[in-house]
Amino acid sequence: MQPDRRLPRTKGPCMQPSTRRIRPRRAAALASVTALTLAVSTSAGSGHLSARGTTAKAGPTSVARTAALGPCMITGGPSVQMSEGVPTTGGYSRSTGAVRALTLMIDFSDARGQGRAQDRFREFFPQTQEWFRTSSYGRLDYRTETPVPGWLRMPKPFEEYGIERGAPFDPGYRELVQDIVAAADPKVDFRRYDFLNVLVTPNAGPSALDTVLSVTFAGNTEAPVADGVPVANASFVYSRQDDGSGTYDRTGYRVLPHENGHVFGLPDLYTQEGGGAVGHWDIMSEDWGANNDLLAWHKWKLGWLDPSQIHCATRSGTTEFVLTPLARRGGTKLVFVPLDGRTGYALELRTREGNDEAVCRPGVLIYRVDADVDTGQGPVRVYDSLRDSGGCTRSPNVHAELSDAPFTPGESFRDPHRGISISVGAELSGDHVVRVTRG
Image (tube, rainbow, N blue to C red; front, side):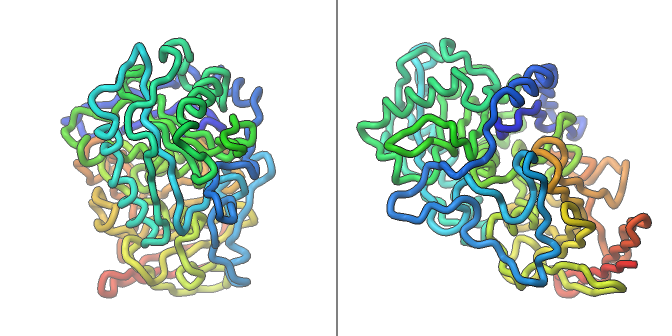
């Protein structure tokens, strides 16, 4: 969740009847949250927690670009919040190379840490590091440090901070961050780090089954300052995302890669209605339940793809491409069909490997990207090859309807208004041929 663009969050909106349903939360707060968003300006800027001795550069260190890719580098308007445009705007953490995450475990007098702080740390690490290593093909070297190994006690009870959903560094959060900085400062040089993870003791605040408090402040130039740098990129994780399905030990950590995705500049892909726009095809849509990867579009934004792995389909007539599975290194990972300067169709091949453990119908995923749509409002829309089928997954807390969305050989997608047709051809040793026709 990214608070600069506060929207109600719903997790696990669609699952099999035999599984436990996670209740939708926060929908009633939409009007007041929107007012808070308008009242507090936290557009991404240049200030951020960065590693000492490095050239702090916002966004991906290197985004694949060539003259041929130019028409596919769509952009949104200046007022768009966390745009899907390429390249990512400034103010966020680097997403390639060695990135240092300061990780602190905090508790309160009215919510004392349960067990050892290092046990809380191990709920998320090394799984988070491994997830990013796999997703980035080794291009992101995620390094986490805990210079304060025990619980960092806050000077006020949790209830006194008034933490609810948290508008961008509202008074409660600003005070909490200032107290964290003051408590950690004797042992922490904040200039050494790219961003901050705060793992709150799970007994502070409500259960995640009732209210998801986990939140990220990203690209916030108005953030409190520590050691001369603003704590502008910070992820907070509360409670435990345990849905009772027995998978927490394997999947509960995934809230942190989602929150860190905001630190790198990625928007929320769920909407007020839940995960129905993208389903489980990106961790920025669903981070509760079975493991899933990032879309190829996001991997381009993060600098994890080479120019040769991306094709911009602008030519009239029919052009043929060969997609390789997204989870594997090398090969073409993304074909983009631009519609105008802000939108287009993306094609990628998803299979059950790597981070994509819940894929039950491998094939070519087709989705529309709109760089002019705010985070949480549906900047990405996946097209379902088998609409109203009920899906094919049996994994708990995975959006079932879109689980069989990929297109398989012999199937096609058409946009008659734009004169665009996309068809999936033969499978070649695990790769898939796709043909893009522009009228």
